[in-house]
Length: 477
View (cartoon, rainbow, N blue to C red):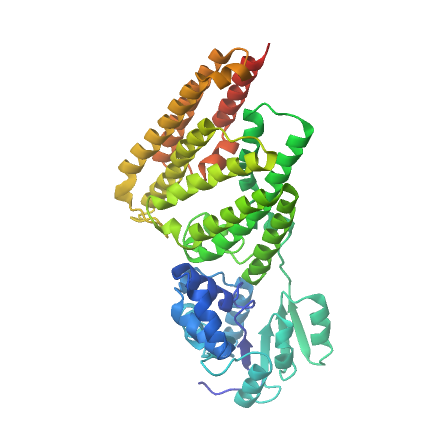
């Protein structure tokens, strides 16, 4: 280490300061994404202390330091400090092996100190270390939380970032020189993006049993609406979980890297509470619809969690699971309203949503191939699978139209519609839409889930309106 002048040392915290994230949570979710048994192993490690937990998780995680969400304001501050001849040290409660990799990548630190298997370098422990290393009041410290108060109490100058107002005032009462970097906190729009409100469109499937049975009374509508709200909350909790498990791959993606957790806009420490809160609200509301509906929601939670942790990496199994989850929404609508579930509707939905699930994988592979990626990140497919996937998507989609055509000829349709022969026109609309979606994905022009794509695509909107118009005409006396 170079010779030090009094006050020439800048000590920098990592979690929430240099990094818009927390490496303890990062390592936990990264380890869980690689091995579903990681939470069990983490619980066992925690019995040996938090330092041991961090060391074990660091060994289990898959870390890419090049894509982590760094705080540019802190990097600029560090570079300005170094330009004046000062010394900069990274001192963090994060495991030292991880901290060293980050420091090596950034190349702006003279020393790195972190936690090891026996020492958790946080709060008072960090204050004692810095005081013994550099002397009392001989360093400037930049941090972000009330856990840093003991460190600032020993520092010559305090620099804060994204610190709550109450803690800021506590720092100022320490009687040392203080500098506050501007706060940047997530807003309501960021949280709405995190829970993927736009994906709630999929939950409209719970209304299909009501629409298919022409049962439009107020009670049935309220039951369907409640089911929609329940699914929205529960599905959002799983979306947050999925984002945490996909942090590494999302940060390497040209558009997914802007998701709130991947970009560090919302601290991933908050995500755990969001998952629990959203799921709790959903399950409490589910109780209003009875025990059978709660059982359906629990099945949905088990399947989606299994998909997020494991099944999405299994070719064919993943798309089958996705089709099943879409169909489960329809089944939930039937259970919520007490309307018998049509075998025709079930058969149609399985084939139709299997087609859309395959198109989703097709779009991911096509987009990856354009970036030179020969394998879909975190999925069980390679670019060479594209021809097979396209054939599967078209075949499954066309079979769903065949099921629809057979349903139109059934006796049940004749009792529900005045002019059932008009419904055959819907088959033509669906054939066109499925063919077009597969073609758009093949051309690399679909960057979203097919259902989300359809919500914003003018042609898809026109097809939906035309479908409703045909159904209305067939029902009109």
